[in-house]
Every structure is written in structure tokens, then in C-alpha cells.
Length: 127
Image (cartoon, rainbow, N blue to C red; front, side):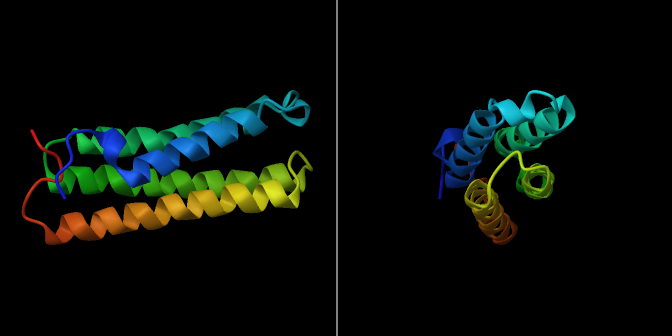
């Protein structure tokens, strides 16, 4: 499973979808007065995709794994912030379920990458 670019990783692609969707929903009126939650949702979702990319370019599997754990935690943080958005009625149940499931998918894909990297003596990326 050699890759030349982080953009080829399904985990990064799904994290990007999550961030894009978060930015879309946080442009809506309910978020206009809650800058902190808006910022936290955006920050955690983009942190997930950013840490996947940063880890990919780290050069070693252990370092990549370290960044993947950070990316996974950021996806979990996004899930937690979604509860706050739901509790404040900034999003409806359908939107919550969609975004929560997408964040969960990101975490599952990250878990798969971690598992692969722990077993593989070779770098995931092609220099």
C-alpha cells in the first residue's frame, strides 16, 4: 500500500468531507452568535485532516502513527462539539447523525491505517 500523496488516503479524503460539511453548517444563522462553538467545530474538523497530512509527511511509521492518534482525537472532539450544537438547536437530529457518522467513519479509517502501519516495516508513503 504505497502512496505518493496524502490526498490518496481515504482517511484524509473523508476527513476533508467532514471539514467541508462542518464549514457549511457553521455558516448558518444559528452559529452567528456563538463564535466559540463555531471556531471549535471548524478547528477540530480541520485538525483531523491536517494531522493525517502532517503524519504522512513525517517520514517514519511511528511518527505517522503519533499524528494519526491526534487526528483520531480531533474527530472525537468534533463529535463532542456536535452534541453542543444539537443541544443548542443549531443543528437538527438529521444533520447531527450525518456528521457524527462521518466523524466515526474517519476514526474507523484512521484505526485501519494505524493497524496497517504497526504491522508494516515499510513506510506507507513513497519518497
